[in-house]
Length: 255
Picture 1: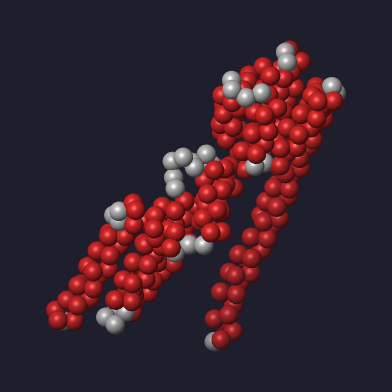
Picture 2 (picture 1 turned 120 degrees about the vertical axis):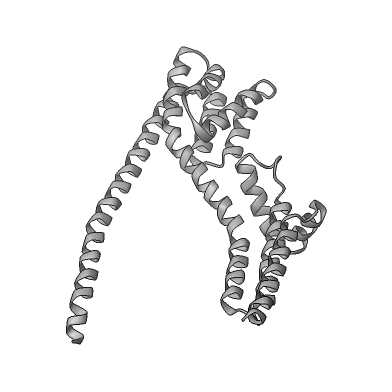
């Protein structure tokens, strides 16, 4: 019994050691692995996600891809090493390798979805406040003040805008905001506001129109969500009832 268990324990120890080596690898090695075992498209996609999240200065996409490649490769290698001694343990390591390869990209995609959802939630409030503050003063001061009335990702974007207004002209700072946020309605608002400034149109009227559209879209989104939830609440009990009926009746039919 001991002679059968000992090789498995040794192989598990080797596998865990490989994973620790992957995690503690030198930064240069990790970066080279990221460049070697990833495509240019994957690196650009990760860099875009990090830029949209405002983390491009903190995290290097090559480091993420390198850690992904080394950790997933080490897990797969560990699974191959363990395979002759224990098939379930090998499957566990191979599955871990697949998860380690997929999770970084899925995590960044999820964070981007949450960021856009946060922008959608706060955008109607921002447009309304911007309209109100524009009536009391000019657009330049309104863009600086409105950030106090919003939260989350939109507040972060407006904080950056306030800092850029100290350095750049209004039109350039707004253009940077539209590119940096990556949110269609906000980019459209910036474009229309800049056109209104250039043509001398009434900015307040433009903001009033955008506020109505933004709130209409938000209300429609909430209505769609409620409709989907009501459908699910009707379907789920029916499915559960059918499943319970099959569980109760099927054994009786077999008998």
